[in-house]
Image (cartoon, rainbow, N blue to C red; front, side, top):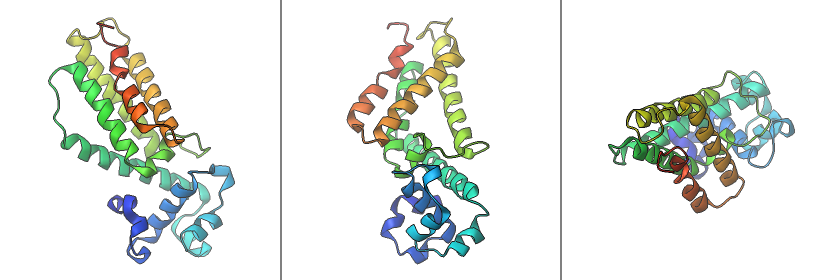
Length: 202
């Protein structure tokens, strides 16, 4: 399903399932508005679907928006997987951290729907796959930092969970700026230096 999202606007809409059309429309409307400003009727009109059809697919506004956010996370996970598979993985742990952060950022900026994962849009996120995705990303950073500490490329006394949380928070802030029309190249330069904040040489 999610392979259609990034180019759905260029397809015959009849070839895209209605629930996916509604999710894409929700993601698009969330570029300039927040959850409280958008109605299900507006989403339905945006993608040419009858309001009763929208409620046939989603029982409530909350369910529709949760599905739209979860869909964006699933699309992003797939984009990141493809990005990682096509890039060499370094042997040195600190370089692994740098590579992981850079590849993640590149995949995120190339995934238009990902903006709903990083901006504060007033969208309910509790119990959503998107929130679990953020947690999983932070755990990935923590695992690499643990290897860095074992390799002595960071201070072995580093508070690993706190460092992972800080790096992930910094990434989220940088991504939010990009989706609010910040400069992507500058953002990637900043992401490219995040690993230096924990390096034992810094």
